[in-house]
Every structure is written in structure tokens, then in C-alpha cells.
Length: 262
Image (cartoon, rainbow, N blue to C red):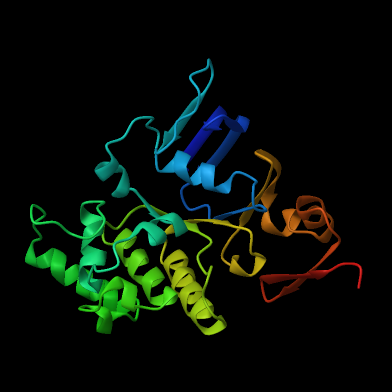
């Protein structure tokens, strides 16, 4: 299968801090993957590497390729890789109307601007996406007048309007209540079943749906485990990852953790 992500021997800095030292990671098309790690493990830096907001240090044998290519025009990349991040949600303009949030994905912009023009079929596609995501009634509502879950679904629509080959979702249910979390994850599961490759970046076990087949454990900038979900997600592995005793519970392909010393 072709590779969506190919990272080789990447050393990456955030200001003066070296986050990754020789990171290597591949994700193939169709390979639904969860990248799981505690705060400070490098997840945010990885997202910025994928969005090309950061680049690795120039060293022999180092490259970061997305869909086989190292350098991208951001608008072209968004047609192939849709990213929904907490950082984007926090930066998004509060007065942007719901429909414009979705349409802004066509230009990878924050809100829409006078020089951005949309064909009738693009507006119709945005409306259909909003219907599918259950947020059609938010068409004319300002972004800052919505719940966190509504905002998240609109940003998912923003990523999907380009019909990308793959989605990268950053802690997709962060800040959502139980009902909103389940509704959002149901949407994500439907996208995976429809053939959209999903890469989940999270520290929450419950965000990993049954359709995820591979799990990567990330700790202090290093991959400490990588493989099929049923082999990587164990009580011992999670205890080592989070540095406390954890007991793993699995029900119908979904996972939860409870204290392991109880």
C-alpha cells in the first residue's frame, strides 16, 4: 500500500528544546492508526510536522514525506491530508458563520475572505456535509456561539470539504461531554468504514474506536511500541507509558483504563 506518512530519522526542535531525536514512523493508506502518548510526549510537535509548520533538522538520511513528497503547497496538501486540531479550534475566528467555517477548508483559511470565491456546487457540498454531520442548523450561527462539540463537527466538515485521502484528528473529543463524544466518534467510525484513512493523535483510550487496527505508543519523543492494537494495548504497556499501574478493560473493541493497584 502507498504510504501517507514516511518519517525517517527526524530530529525536530521547538525553540531550543529537542523534541524528537531520530524519529521514524510510517503510516500506509488504509491503515487506521492511533498515536497514543501522555502530555509532553511529542504529539503536538508531530502534528506540526505533518502540517509542515515545522521541519526536521537537515541531516543525512532524514526526510519527512507525505504521500511520497517532501515539499508541498499547503493548499495542495490539504486536498490530500485533512487535519482537525485543538490548536485550530482555539485560533478560529469567533464571528465566522457555520457555513463559512466549512467553506474555509477550500482555501485552508480562517473564515472566508472577499477574494475567496465559491462555485454553487462547492456551497452545495458544504451544505450536504453539514447535514451529514448534524450541524445544518448552524449555517448562520457565529462560531463562538456554538458548543465545543458543534465547533468540532464544523471543523471536521472544513477538513472533509476537500475530500482528502486521510484525516488526522487531534484528541477529537477533548472538551466534549459524553453524548457529544459518542456522536462525534460515531461520525469518525462511519468515515473509516467508508474508506477514509484516519490517524488519531490522543492520550485518551476511549477515543480509540474498534476500527483502529494499529497503535503507536509515544513517550518523551520516542516510539516505545508500535504494532497491531491487540498486541500493543496491554496493561503492562500502558503502565510503562503513563508511569503508574494501569488495568486495561476491553469491551466490544473499545478500551478504558482503571487504576491497576485497586
